[in-house]
Amino acid sequence: MNPVCGVCGRDNIFTTCADCRMPLCDGCARFELLAEGCGTVIPAYFCPSCVSNPFANPNAIFWQMKEKN
Ligand SMILES: [Zn+2]
Ligand SMILES: [Zn+2]
Image (tube, rainbow, N blue to C red; front, side, top):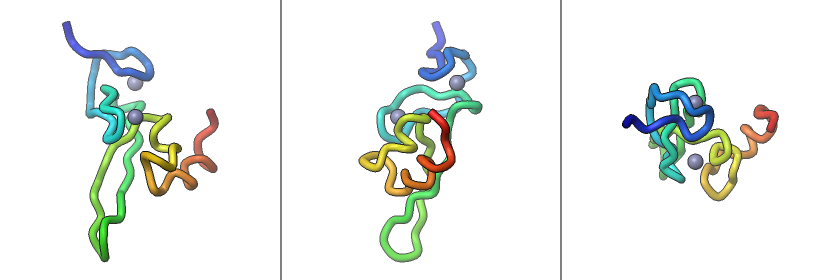
């Protein structure tokens, strides 16, 4: 049995949330670049709830303006 997307239930898993490890399909994953130290950015994918959670994502404030929950 394949894992399904923790958000919409589709079975085409694309990645997992960088914070809560929820499986995500390509439609539900939120791409983010996390600044780390000086000049280094780390690509990460979050689920829709973690991407707007300031404890999980330092850039959450931008998503809170963009995402409508
Ligand atoms: Zn999904
Ligand atoms: Zn998450």
